[in-house]
Image 1 (cartoon, rainbow, N blue to C red):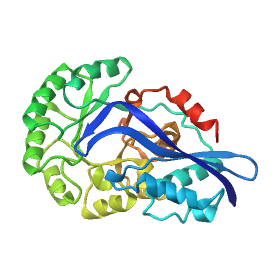
Image 2: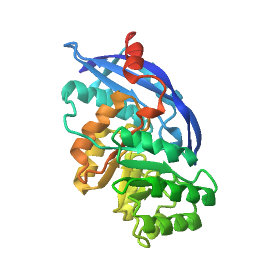
Image 3: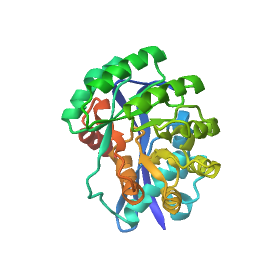
Length: 315
């Protein structure tokens, strides 16, 4: 089957710079793709690279799209290299949207992403009023003593029914991770995400056996190959999966279902196009009803529907 192809790069500015142990992020860049089959049916897809998480760069994705011309075949879509995981996801999701159109029709719960530092102490209240009951707070950005002091204020301010996730983005070492886990055990944190850097999975496996707070892998399982490697290593804890950068949605679906993984789906600040494809996977794979890490709407300046309408008008 041959499909007509159109694509367009985009840029979206964050309301405030997103600070993690990887640095500061001010603008989300990606590509919207549009496939049209011989009957005129349209499938939308999104390529949302996150190179510091292990995906290809935006330049590499644009180069790939530009080389395709105005048409692409089914064979080409399913032959995209594993070195281009976000292209795999974007094109295969668009193909699936044509072949198996399906809207997510069940209610989803989300965790709201708090800003780093003291800003979290007032932002959680706004998100609570919007209906969020689970929150994620990034650590490993400020000096640990400063972050722990803020953490104690935050955890004491949150209502009893609230849940809190901590995300280190690989920014801790053994000593600081141990310190955070001792504190987390006292406050019933839902889980601590990626305390140590990629490559230190054996140490995180050891940490997971020493404390009651569950650990989750994130950067260590950014792609399907990494996910498989960590599973083979013996990891049976939580896997935080960012579908838009993981690679083929078909391979991801099969592996997670075959091995009954404890999965939390999470955002890479994609648009509603990428989210819909991710939600479709979550419906099939997520079995422990953990809130999805897609509570990120408040991080962008413009209304998404208006912004997307403006972007789509020339496609």
